[in-house]
Image (cartoon, rainbow, N blue to C red; front, side, top):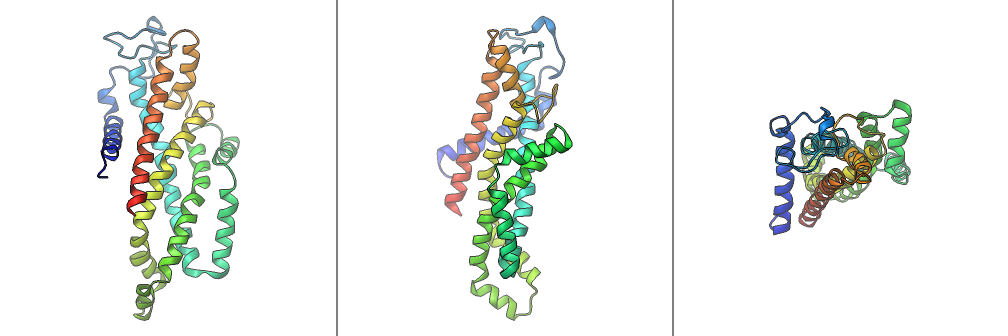
Length: 263
């Protein structure tokens, strides 16, 4: 992360994580408390970004909304990375029919847009963050697993694997103690790269009203409600939430590209 842009991106994400962890201390108001006297309120010293259509403080909702906006994508990528890594190493190690079955299943899943899985999960379980996370986890697993499988196949053919096998080590031990550590940089790079897409997908689904539900603060929801406010002359909420989403995605993509170049 030696480039200035990468350092700025890392600093931005670090600051955002810190704000997220300290949201109750930093937010000046209750993010869910309406104040009709501040409905569509202008920017003032008391309300730095004004109020939304219900008079809730926009800055407080942005601070608290970072939690759901970031938690969902992190869960999606974290779970899909674990499952995808396990599938990739299993396919590469066993080869043959096992590899063929896993590869074909990953190809089928990869061909379906992630938002379709999210919509199916919402249709079965109802709107909310958990169904969307589960649906997108299914969609993102092949994104990680397909790349890792190719790398694991290359590692599988290297001399150190044969040497460990001759020494009597089990396949599980070789995979966990040798293959997995050597794949770790690629796993991290793939996960960081996918995180930006997950942020966009979660925000889009919340914008459609199928993810995080009101009155919970969420950037995707704030863009949706902010568009209604913009039609009434106050676009601060939509612009602020949309800008933060764009900044997070750009920062994550910069770090992902940097990590990918270093692996």
